[in-house]
Length: 225
Ligand SMILES: [Zn+2]
Image 1 (cartoon, protein in one colour):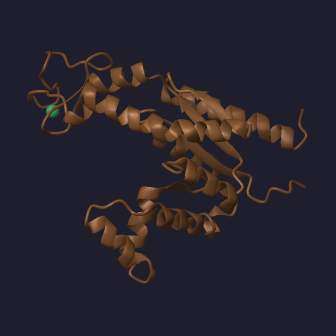
Image 2: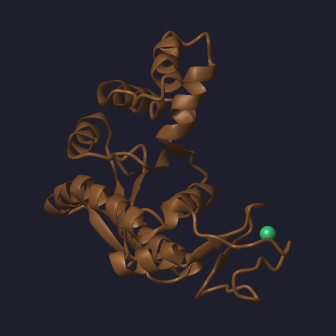
Image 3: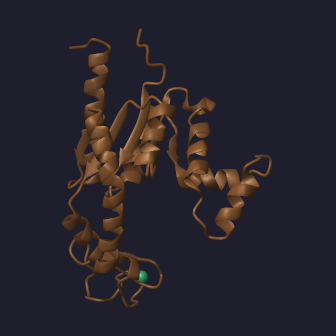
């Protein structure tokens, strides 16, 4: 029998626009485990007045402040102990820093750490090519251009580039991402746990790589050569 009681403790790392949220959700559905992400955890605690930490969390969030790392860590540690996580969970958006990765190391028994690799050039291209109209319809200059340049096919409104999608903004976000995440990647690489996934391909292609790695590993564990 496998000694690991929770075989599916899964962390998914990836830069903005790598589709890590989508992949984490697909993994969670496939292996019938919860998708855990810090945003929803904080919102759940905040709206659960019976929770003793509710008012503390609400205090930070309502003021637009970041919830302190120690508190986030504690909430994540509590969350992964809940009954629905008895076989594991698929997590994205955490750990965000090296300290949180070290915290996970002592608070959980992580089985898989997937790192969706995608070049900064691709991310910048994906993001800076996006155009939206005021009704929220989204187009991409290269991947899904509108029939008439600068005009939304769906509603005829003018298309524009959101500030968030501008190259400078994307570069700044990527810089922060690398500053925080490169240390986490190194941490899991040194432990021999990091599983790199080629994120340059489409959603199904990325997901197939993840599932294949897991199936190969699970076959090894049950002795299926
Ligand atoms: Zn439109």
